[in-house]
Length: 261
Image 1 (tube, helix red, strand yellow):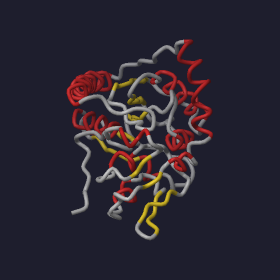
Image 2 (cartoon, one colour):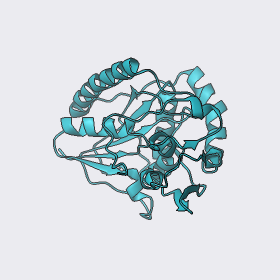
Image 3 (cartoon, helix red, strand yellow):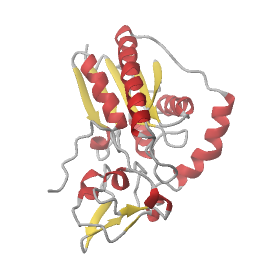
């Protein structure tokens, strides 16, 4: 059976989940959602199973993922599912948001199953990562969770989590404010004198939101708040205010980055 997994990632959590699942499913193809940004019109995959894998931002979807879902036509797909990664909570409200978008899209067809996976949080603007021991435990649990999800996907299990009232209230309170200002939220970023003009931030930004001017990064205000630039900067030169100067950085240990020599 053919499986297509569409994924969005910034610091590697959702990519690790997508890769882990793909290894456990026969005839599986990984497709980065960012590769479809400039593809016009509806997206109509031809596969027996289609999965969407993405992080949770403030109890909702990344803007780019929401836009992608609005163009996704799943009418010819026998089984569709989503896996959302999260550092805290908010996975169920985000799954319900995705379901609503898909049913409003061209195919008018939602998900057969929705899953969440707890991963180390990466939103360094608000908090630092857990310690190494805790990260290791979280990732080990996530790997076991993917094994479990892979079995359910192969069996075609239908699983729709119930939307808790508290989760719905939290999403309505925090997500609209986040998503309205997400593209301009890069105005918080700055760069200090540790910058070596290596250009890694330009290369890792999934939406081409950064360019170098006179050797320094400049943000172009179509940010997704994925945290790739600030988390992956080798000399930790990118900041978002004073608090991030004191916080450790995180990316998934399996994320392959070609660092400057």
